[in-house]
Image (cartoon, rainbow, N blue to C red; front, side, top):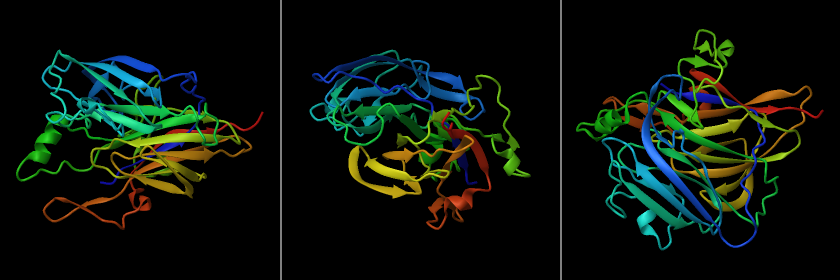
Length: 344
């Protein structure tokens, strides 16, 4: 069944990581990796958390900094490695996080120190690289900033959107099913998550979806309730987008706004404008979003849709290139994301 998640955008000013314009610095962190019960899409399951957070903490650094992360494996029965997606690891291949290739996995109870230099600015992410641990939620954003940024936006006006797919089937059963002979197809994801949040049994736009999912009714501090990002009128915001999906190919759009693509996979590109953007597993983008000045203030939706995957007669997946986001609107879940407050 096709899945689509809609985020309503509200932008909250988030203080950007600050660093002096001096010599390269050091970012040093201590992480503990362990299983925890969470409800990413309002249905409880097990996630792999870092220091009790899911998704894992965002790493902020400046180009040229040395990153040192001490990772302790507190999983009872699984090894762990972490891959820093988009980091070139020049001279430090043992920190690349490829188990059995560039490093031995971290055994339960043990600690391994990753140390590497982030040599150029860009939007990146990290994820578990052992078994299906990425599908279990072992991932997070990594933002490397330039002290000589040339993009024209307010450096304090940017937001991270970490996109992922989510199954209610455990990562152990996913791995067993996909590696069995014959392969057992695990089906489409139950939910799509933005920054670790989505909805499965309800829709924020249930009133638009007659006969479909019921409208969501969140309680205070509900872990699957949407995050509200608040934006101000007539400003330029940078959205850093990363896809850590296991299987899903995604399409993202913001209602009433065009997106100016300025970075792809950690590399600056000649800017071009789109109405929506396709993003596949492992890809990252930066886009500039220019807000309006609505009167009265209003909210807009960010849509995140899964590009279609169909099953053939043997129950195996095949891609249908004709499937568009419009073809996935039968199952809608809305999550607030962009609200423009208007001038006062």
